[in-house]
Length: 270
Image (cartoon, rainbow, N blue to C red; front, top):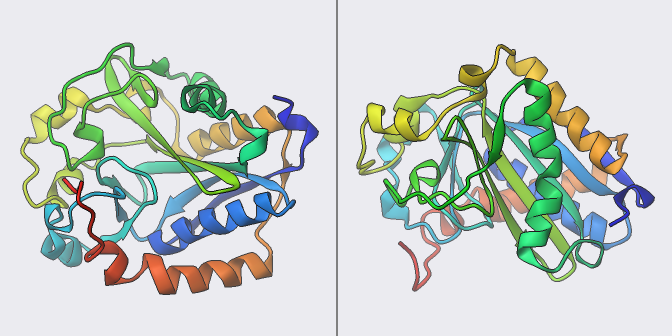
């Protein structure tokens, strides 16, 4: 696919709260589907946030712990388990483009959109790759402890270092992912009502950029931004005022509400 023939913008890392970060992805999808620029971006969750999977049961979260520790909670549009996004230890990204310009096959789309993520790891000095075979789940509600899948989970030294997920609207594809720069094990486990595993089991499954390479978070972010920009020949850009206004409204009315985070139910919730 000739991605560079289209208009792409790179939005460098910006720190915002969880509801706003999730709302911006929906708004970016509307922009791309409406003929505006496609978006690649790196972003930071501030304050630290637990993003629940789309079908994750609300009672799997330790709400009192999150409140006590100042951890925000929102819910993603993508499935899987919850991810604790530490303000300093997590690096997140998203890629948003029109559906008719990206592969319709899920595996092909993952292969294409994950190319810059693997390139970024290479530039960081991290020998990361898709996991070669499925690994059994240690704790279903926690994304980093769920079964590892070759389609979208990345490992370094045999341990998970990044997860990626996609969802589609009628006219757009949104892929986002979380890269572990460092491990904040206490919070990763503490935000769940029953984590099911201890620190040693967590460290046996999960690794980080900091463990794998001698690189600062600032340089790791720069490597990811450079890889995303090169991948689609993006120009450095920014959100428009209209996009920010729309995202604030969407965050207030959806992603920051109890109806979305605590009370949304589905027959297949786990």
